[in-house]
Image (cartoon, rainbow, N blue to C red; front, side):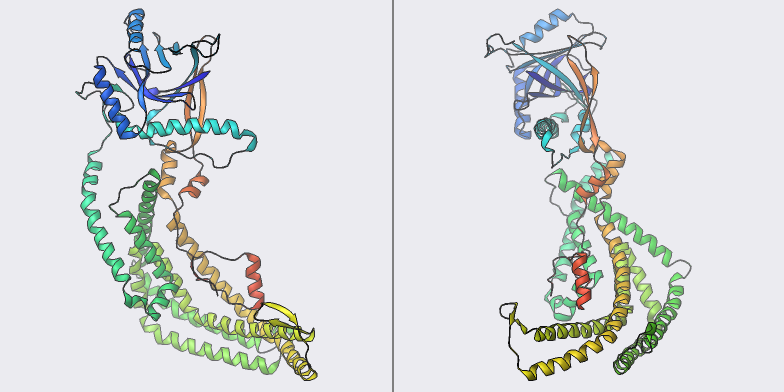
Length: 581
């Protein structure tokens, strides 16, 4: 049987001693965590291992001996190390030895029990695998969820070994808290043997974050309680709060701040990474918002925008008037129903006249409104973009009204024509059973149905043309708002912290490992070096993407085209989880 021994590279130059680690019988693997040096008292070593097992829930034990031959006689040291097997019994017992010069290694695994099969050797072949203990401790292993069928068996076995190694090192962090400068009775060599990594600034920030987070969490809970007041659940406020993008974004940011300043400790690395990604997202959002704020308030750009906004609105209204006058004539040489054409054209022209009057009424206050809108950028760029989307919705409200009028009129005629077409075929729609049933009609019903069908059919082209034009205008506005929402979702959901780890410390996000052969000679153990394969950027974004509050399409392109053809209204503002009509 081939036994795999994972040995940390930081212990290659350590003095002789005992191998402390975990034995994984399911994978026939031994994970060495540290080297225990002489002198020591066996009872104190057993007490230390018992404390580590209780704190980490890992079966840490003495796996064997480590001999680093420098100047001491090899034979006397070997006999002394062999005698320690009776004090710390373990099956199998590892004996690793690095010969003088460091180029030759010997590795053996012996069993004190007699072999079960006759003629079986009492020693196992050992494959020595070196690993960087610090990288394995700090990394998060992301194993593939879907495996090929032809490689499922071998891949599952290797995946189990890697998971056991990473889990053992991660859960044995309590063993690495002592270094060689400690005055305790036990001296260990591991990745922090030269001193525990620490930072005065990090320690001060950790101690100061407790009361600060408690204070901010109390303020956020107060804000949440005020926002949950019954006054905000009344009809006008609740309706506006559910439809305005700014309110949705503010609620989303309030959830982020509640998560950031929560005093609850993260239970696993995934929760800690999510909180770090949330902090990075909020900081980036606020930084971009402050940059936008400084740009808007510099060189009186808000005044220039206010001066240009009213002429642009007037120009849009004039273009709509020209478009309606074109539709009231003979658009593209089409012969329309003149009476209906004139009624619809004058109706929409009257709405445009009302809209121009409204714009000129609001023109003295536009600069003050834009100034306060610019101040909202200090809450983040996403808040400013959401407010911009709401302003676009308000400025194009007349286009939305035209779309609704045209869609309702077109939908009414489509449903009327479909009902009358069923009348010609002797069918009717059964409302109770939700199906089409046969039905007999008398002569008067067929005559009236024929008249109504003819009227609706000849009026349909005029209505369809108005519906088509205003639907295209509405889709153009929806496309602009959709681009703004995509940018807001990108800022809200982009895992910046995880991407920074992947860029600066790729070993922190591990997709797997690769092995490089160090030595492969006859009569010598196979020595490999385990190196971490970083997670691809696409998988980093997919795994650590933060949840967003933006609009997400619920229908396919086919369903959307069907709705547009039947004249059903498209509600692009519906948020995730809202009910559909």
